[in-house]
Amino acid sequence: MSDFNELNVGPRWYIAHTYTGYENKVKATIERVVANRNLSDVIFDVKIPVTTSTTVDSKGKEKIVEEKIYPSYVFVKMVMNDETWHIIRNISGVTGFVGPGSRPVPLTDEEALSIAVEEQVKLDAFKIGDEVEIIDGFLTGHKGTVSEISEDASEVTVIVSTIGREMPVNMDAKAIKKV
Image (cartoon, rainbow, N blue to C red; front, side):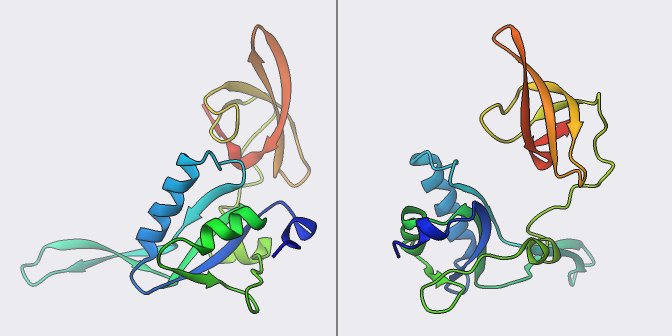
């Protein structure tokens, strides 16, 4: 597996195959391992895409039911390297990654958007001068002002005031929200 480090393309969505019914347990375990080992810089997100519907039971009560769109699969946004591969692969309930042999294949950006594991940021979501709060990354919780927006609106520059001075920070548009 040592060629992961050479082929590393940054954080991407990978699909871990699980035993049927173990999806939530695997997701919780991954999140616990990330928190315990401080791996939030290499394992960013874990999702189980679901669809919700409303059903009526025999007594006429409405119930909201969640149904997994892809049973037996957990989606993990991570930097693939020997350590992260080993961590995910050895979680109880995980049978392997989706890909040929033991070689995980990341989802393309289009695939991630089409299966709803990656939210698409609206092009008009932010404007220069907007007050925003950082919701992901090392400056989580800080507030700032949008000073630049990339052409495709996927990246923004936020002016953040820390330690008594203003500093521009380039970040993914998904890492901020309007105040």
